[in-house]
Length: 494
Figure 1: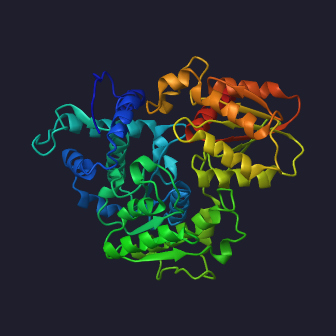
Figure 2: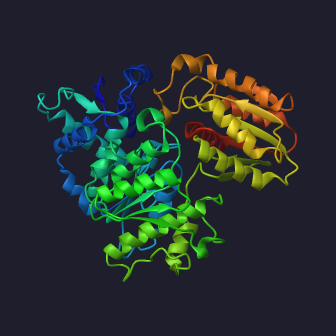
């Protein structure tokens, strides 16, 4: 989707960059209009990405020097990307600068573009942002080939950030970069990457059905679209058989190989920086992906291989242990309460996160609280998945359904503005009221049920519920998780 920018830029600060970036978000009405056409594919996406790149001074071949790891999947692709980046970061002498591009962000949009594990600074974000912005303003596209690229138009939010990441990593002289696909693979804006070093596919599941299809086969076809000739592809073990078959077909079509990665024996009981037993599969995949890069870069004499008993170097283990990835099986202690935070928003990820919470707190005698939101997917189904996964070992005493609005003022944190939901539904608490009724149906009257219009009020409610410590499970949306962390940040500086 092409967005015509309505702003007249006054300054070029980080705040100005975020304001301009937010103007590129697709609004809810446009998304719904496209859905009504029934068209899942936009074959112009990659052609337009190549054209936008040309206008900011690059061809796709320029990005080959970034030695890219390209990762897709339904569950765990962000964690796998973080693990891979952290392993590569242990080899600073040979690879001094490692780029990481992921989505979505939690607190700040800068989290999407990281170097050596850290979000780029506000100053660098603003600098590179306006270099891309201004180049687009000063160039044009042939309207006979790109009729939507009228003068003054800009790519949409995610596409612009993808362009910005390429520009940033090249300017910062990154020696290798890890790219997480946004949605799918075949027509994702990151798929203009022509020659990745290696590709990875995490566990497949049903998600983004409007864009990717209703069956695991259709989804696997889209995910396999990132495969490239000569770039080996790897996937986790215990992949859904029908999806795995399609991935293998796609690998054959793209003249490459697809190999299943087992959970390495050394990782069965290793300490990982991201909690959750299911992360061992993602960590194993990351080990193989990083090994491919390090071998190609002449850092390792030979590849690690995929034998379960393979000997994993200490630097790899250190990288896995030191990985930091907020919002995924994260535990925070605040005063006497313990917060268990995971932005799970698909069936598989919800089951995994809920199981992690259940196994972690089932022996705890503390009161149990659920804080939940999911504004755009099938929230009722996710709540049912959650309830089934924790019961009967964990019974919630209180459940709170909120929106992703950050503050009591009705505003969002600037980096968390979202125009991709129905504003009317948010204001009327339509989803939240439906969820509290659904909870009553599945849980009876055991838990007290609450609805709050924003995250700040939800946090205040939790603080007032008990005079004793509680275990609080926060899940359903990364936007909810990000907003809560922003609320915590403000409280911590008071």
